[in-house]
Image (tube, each protein chain N blue to C red):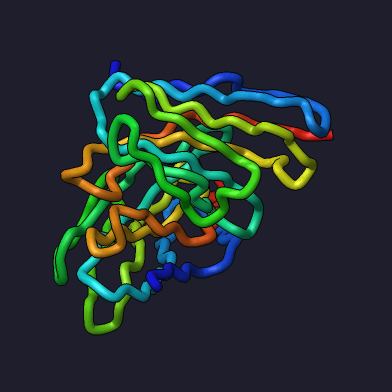
Length: 113
Length: 113
């Protein structure tokens, strides 16, 4: 079945550092891939998405590229801010899987001033 | 404003006392789903609904019931709560044309004593 694996946290960075959160997936079909962000005390929000191989999703300075050859969708940001402190979830959804969205375990990011 | 509204946000109850967590969305979404979030496990799907009167089990349906009598509402029912159902619950919705692009409620933190 489909699955998502993302790097364990927490990840602690200083402000303006480069961020990478790794995500790899297993899917039988051709999934769409997503990154969601959860700020403290809130629900998840869609951060970015990519629907086919080689697509790059981007939003708020974050980027992720759908790499079919390595089954990966790593999240990157060139310069993090304290306000980026949150939990980040990688996810996939596959029509062949009946619209079910599979989430990774989440990676907590702490950014220090 | 487009939103998914859950109530209650916080609840402490005792084993065996039936409770209902309500979920309502104002975006005319066909698809609605319930997740529970537990540390280290990410989000796990409890039940989902593709449309009115159509519901199906997710990964962890035991101990839960749902109904979808109206398009906007998707209540989660715990007939006889147990301590292992202590968790953070999220309702989410989406258009079926864009599976995986979910809109989440703010969450309901449930404690069963």
